[in-house]
Image 1 (spheres, helix red, strand yellow):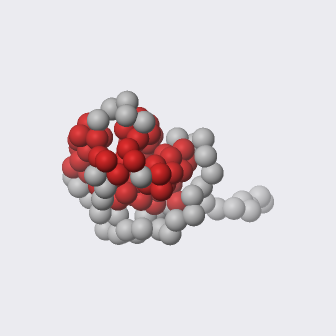
Image 2: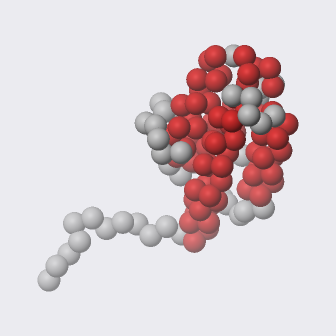
Image 3: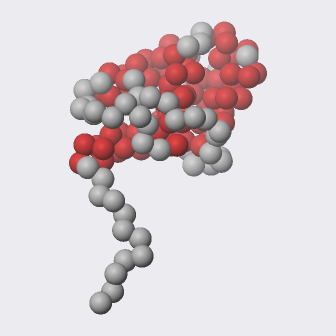
Length: 122
């Protein structure tokens, strides 16, 4: 009789919906964050986007406050960074621009995983 060497734990349906939300929304946010940092869209447009994403997130039920993985933690870190800055910081602060670029590239699957700790979901 054959047995599996690796038995992947089943993901509860609730967690699956949460991860699908992250997979669907993270690349959109990352592209817009890069565009805003290069002046291609306004900071207000970027703010409206992540506020809409947060409003959608808050309608989803979840009981685990921890991020499920590094990808989700990067998404929340980008949201946290963008919500804590002003438009002039986005355009002029090289440290913030670098952080946004690193997180965005990872969320777009064109960069390596940033070294961040897992953060709580909002």
